[in-house]
Length: 339
Image (cartoon, rainbow, N blue to C red; front, side, top):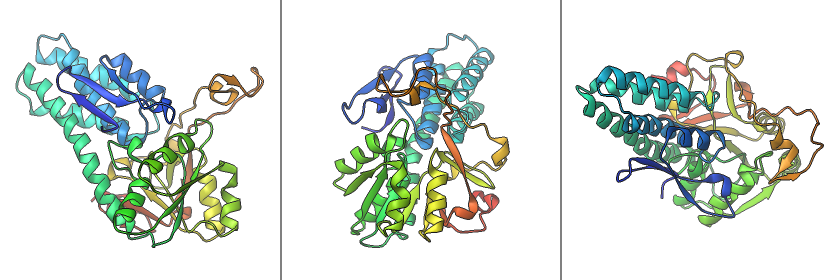
């Protein structure tokens, strides 16, 4: 199934619980707004494009659950729900984008039932478009990979981070689909190990060769000549930086030092034309993500912890940005991408 989808029979949201991978593949159902917000906060659903769909489906869910008996009351309910959903992950711009686009679709409705129909339809459109967008992005990016390349990636920017196919891994999948032999090196991505738990699982499902390394090994494998390209996804792209999973900046510095191309793959919806590094809130995660691993204590319980979910990679470290509109090279002008 898709990473996240809408159940027409129950008017609920279905998603793969990513916190259980790779040990268990389980589909869960969100029947309430609270359940969806918990799923977003706990990373049962994660990844910028998937969060865009989650935000849209959240508005649709709120519409079907609302007891409002007139259009004004329903609109008020949906806008309140929108604010709750957007507050769950402040850094990833796609979440707010999906919510806002679905809210805006209400303008096309003329009655109470019409609003509900429109927002559900718009949410489904956003999910469908994500798959098509990633396929287009993948084809553009595949041209940047050569037959025989070993590509390093960080975190998970595959189908589990999207509705399907993926961004960074979508590029790799598209290259393999085009007949190229691609080997992948996946960084584990501490502290929640999305690289080791999810990326390796995805690639092994597709029989794409993958080798797992710890995050701290990336400089070593680059220096040894084991990496040809680096490709990552993005949670928000502003005029000056790329926000992505913590550790991305370190890999970009190492790639630049070793003259290895560093690519970012992301849909246009991830671009923030209003944002700059110092205006974006970087989400701080639970301190116990570093003190414990799978409920096993690995650090003193009272040790001070700093646990940002993302870091910022300056544009001078980025070789190219791959989107569904094509590949963009420096200087990166957001207005040109969004035109």
